[in-house]
Each structure stands twice: as structure tokens, then as C-alpha cells.
Image (cartoon, rainbow, N blue to C red):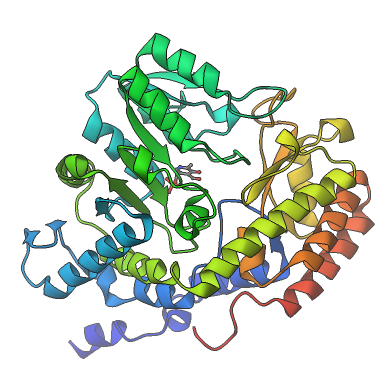
Amino acid sequence: MEATRNLLEVKLEEVDPEIDTLIREEMQRNEETINLIASENYPPKSAMKAIGSMLSGIYSEGYPGERYYRGLENIDKIESLARERAKAVFGADHANVQAHSGSGANIAAYLSLLSIGDRILSMNLDAGGHLSHGAKVSIVSKLFDIHQYGVNQETGLMDYDQIRALALELKPKLIVCGASAYPRIIDFARFGAIAKEAGAYLLADMAHIAGMVATGDHPSPVPHCDIVTTTTHKTLRMTRGSLILCKKEHAAKVDRAVFPLMQGGPHQANIAAIAVGLKHLTTPEYKAYIKQVLANAKLLASELQGLGFPIASGGTDNHLMLVDLYPQGIDGDTASIILEEAGIVVNKNRVPGDKGTPKKPYGIRLGTPAMTSRGMGLDEVKQVARWIAEVLRNPQDEAVRKRVKTEIADLGKRFPIYLPGYF
Ligand SMILES: Cc1ncc(COP(=O)(O)O)c(C=O)c1O
């Protein structure tokens, strides 16, 4: 009995040195590199404390006040706090905080409004849409009749007249807006008008830009949409999870689509961590952080452009940009590999008018949320742009990559992600 009890107390480094070491190595990798993955960030320690709490073992099928199990009075309060905070931050009628992921949130949202086989009009993956908006390889394309819009191949911008024409012609039951790789402001009011005219529901997936929406630095989709979904771990800088925000009339259907249609018990430790993260969003520090994310992204785009790297759509209004590498004669796959060797972590991405293939597109996507979380500002952005240019102009030169990697590790020491002593 004593032995069983003790197993609960053994420290990670004793019970599983392999995993403990890998976590430490991953922390070190992050400290020594610059993360420009637009969809990643570093969650606050306070939220990580909540996610690492004993709430991880709780079962709580149902919703606050209507559960299947007893013993959930504290859990009910936590989930209610998360829901109320989400509603307050985004000005929504209703919030569901249980969907385990952004993709799951989207599928639950579709199922709450649509029947199987109904028509959806959404942005295609090549233009910056997400898999869960109906890509061929996603279950979404098997469940619904997917039609997609893109961006203008020359300007890189959404063509709202074309989207309107498609909506009026195709008469979809749902229009999906929002993207994973679109660097400009999305005109949600325009989408609202198009949906109304076409007699369609409107869903915005604001996963990438939710941080800017929370602080008022991007127009909110909430007033114009039936449902708004978001992940919690990108610009929102929380732990992984998602939110579904909706109008009052869809609340019961959304809740039923998440549980019991899509999921069983919610992950209450995640929900507690999301509640903590939501509390951060209204602070002056978070508002200043988002302003810096935007300033850093603008500068990174203009510096790279000045160094001879065209940026799709000519710049950025948000936290990310798409770099067109075609003129440099280097594909995005190779670029991401050699940049990683030099300590700069990015992902390959298609750019408008891309002449490559999905596996070897001619672009990379860069984002500033993670580097800004470390306190890096305009001086560091300029240096990062110079490093990127140097590495990409000298793809054969391993010595350049080695030197840049050392310089980046030195920079990392001046901008630690987490101060030691908490874990
Ligand atoms: C716009 C958008 N929606 C949804 C998702 C999916 O989130 P998850 O990975 O949590 O399923 C992403 C992920 O990158 C995204 O960019």
C-alpha cells in the first residue's frame, strides 16, 4: 500500500529520466534558437501550473450545473469562470471551452449548424486556409460539400467581390473565413454582408489573430458571425486548447455538438489553464505585448524586403508574413532546413502564385509572437532579418550557419524565455 502511495510522490527526474531529459533538452533548444513559427508561443508559467495540476485526472462529462458525476463543485466554478472570461474578453453571447483542439472546435461548430452533406464555402489551404476548413485530406471534406475561394495570385489579397460572386452562385449553407497564413486584415463586416446576402451562416476561425482581436488591434469577427472559433495557444499565448464563441441562439446546439456528439469528458486542467490565460488578456502588459508583436512583424517584413526578399502582399498587418523565395532560387523546404541549422525555426509555406509543389513550395511563413514573448524588440528584429538573409544567400556555406547559430545562442542568453527556478 505504502509503495503504491509513494509512486504518486516520485519526482519526474527519478521515475522517468528519459522524458525529463527530453523536456529539459526541448526547453534548452528553445532558449538557444529563435522561434519564428507563427502559430507557436510560450505560455505563462501560471497557466502551466494549472495544466500540471491534479485537475488532469478529473472526469466531468456535461456542463457546469448539469454533470453526470458528483464531486464537481470546484470544477463547475472553474469552467464557469473560463466561459465568463471568454465571453467578456470577446464580447460573445456564449462560450464553449471544452473542445480539445482548434480542428475539433471547427468540426463541432460545423456539426452544430449543418447536416452531413451540406455545402460550405471556405478558403483553400494553398491560399492560407486551414486543413479543418475542408482540405481534401481532412474528414471535413468527407462530411460536407466543400467549395473554396483563394486569394488574388498577384496581390496576395482576398478578393471580396469574387467571394461574394461565389457565395451567390453556390448558395452555401455556411461560409468560413479566417486563415492560417494570411498577413492582412480580414474584413469580417464584409464577410457578414456577403453571408447575409447569400443566406448563409458565417463562421470565423480567428485562431491566428485572436490576440489582436482581444486587444482591439484587429476588427472583431464576433458581431458579424454566427460562430467564432479559435485556438488558445497562438497569439493568445495560452496553453493548447480552443474556444467556440457563438450567438445565443446557437448555444445549446454548439454545446451538444462538442459533448456528447464529438467528445467525452473535457480536459479540466486545460480549461483551468485557459481561464488563467484569459485573465492575462485584459492586462496592460498583454496589450503592450500585442503592440510589440505587430511592430516587430512590420519591421521584419520591411527589413527582409529591403534585403531583397519579396513579401507576399507587400507586407503585413498582423503577426505573420509570407516570404517569397523564388527570386532567390531556393525552395521553402531547403530554406527551413538550413535556417534551422543556423538556429532560426520557421515553416515552409506556399505563397500566392507559388511555382513549387506542396512539399517544396517557394515560400516560408514567419511570425513574431514567440520572439516577442522573450522581450525581443526592433533591434533584435533587424538582426534576425540580417541573419535570415545571410543564411539564405549562402545555402552552401556551412560555416555561416555555424557562426549564426552561435550568435543566436548568445542572443538567447540575453532573452531567456523562462527564468530558472519554477520547475
Ligand atoms: C486557422 C487555424 N484553425 C485551426 C487550427 C487547428 O488547431 P489544432 O492544431 O489545435 O487542431 C489551426 C492550427 O494551426 C489554424 O491555424
